[in-house]
Length: 216
Length: 216
DNA sequence: ATCCGCGCAATGTGATCACAATCCGCGACG
DNA sequence: CGTCGCGGATTGTGATCACATTGCGCGGAT
Image (cartoon, rainbow over all chains, first blue to last red; front, side, top):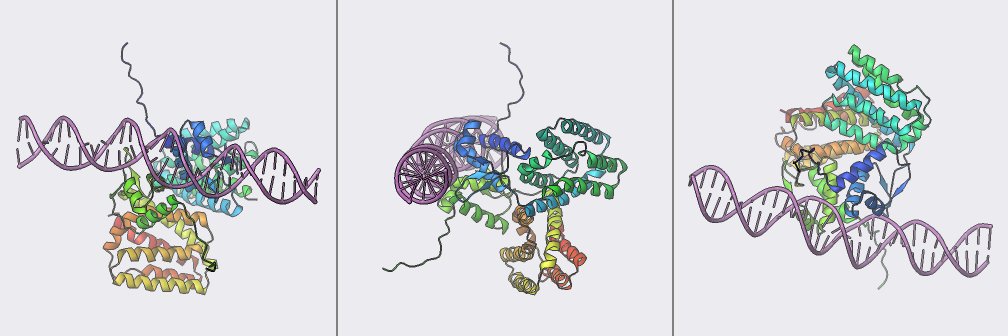
């Protein structure tokens, strides 16, 4: 048999697989707030022992994506309104800065990609696909912010998204159709025009919009 | 023997003791950038096995306080100038907001405490005590920000401090004496006057000041 | 029917161990 | 004297296990 060149096998540690798996699920709102998790259950699901499961959980707890009772029981946190307001303010602060830094580097290919993602958002909103909505919404923001070339800031922003994940799902359930990409269009318009104040306002509005009604 | 009421023993898990121990040391700049750590070494030092040591290290890696080579070797990170600039920008964003939120709640007792801490800073600067300087500087900021009643924001700010820890030490080595509390005095003055724009500027200056020269 | 205990099952914690990867120092060779 | 290579020692990883704690369901009493 002739040797076949195959894609390089990315060896990723067990704890990292578990971490990323759980993280994605939390960020997309696939775990309800208050839902309980067990180390043995996670281990069985990812086919690893308790050790890497515990490491992944510990890390997510440290990032605020999970909460831990005094007895060590793990669940997704139920956020208070004050905390939601804080996290929304953090999103606003960091993401406005990221957008502002991305602006001078935003060329036409980026704007095209953002518009494509916006199209996807319209689709999933029409299909009432909550997880799809969150996924493509995050992709829209991440695509823009990647241009800022500011990995530490982006990481902070993602940590905030993560903390809001379980709660986010509840919000997008009561989303009115087609309301969604309104501020995204403003963001794109400001990018095209090179209008920094407009961009800052549009991002702040987009971030604040939904979360305000969530903290009601 | 008569039963004695004793202070409630705070049982803190092994991994948490290790985490806090390492975290404090890193934040105070007691570990040089690039210094290597081993799990067995940490375990021996804190008298625990490798398991809690690894959990603590993993958490610190997730928070950016330590870095890990592809082979799993652990050391404190050596920050690039770009990263330092980013972290300084994050400090500025978050801490200005925290100070602004603390302003309406800042009464005289708080200002007194801040002035006391400033006195301590003057002392340790005179004694060329770098670790003492970092410690009391952080205490000054934390004391102010605690009044903001914004735990999520404060946690973010502390994470940034943590990432800058190992590098910070290098900075304060080349500090000119008595230059230190200059911006702190401006902060206190703005607090007394209820001057929000002044406060924002003073905090931004204080945060940016040192880190600019560090990224040279 | 409801509430309270009791005991078992389930869970998190941390130690230990086997294993593979990797680093480092020593010696041989150019 | 410098450089390469090899082998032992060191290190991180993940599985497993014993143990303490906690939660929960079943049964009985009121």
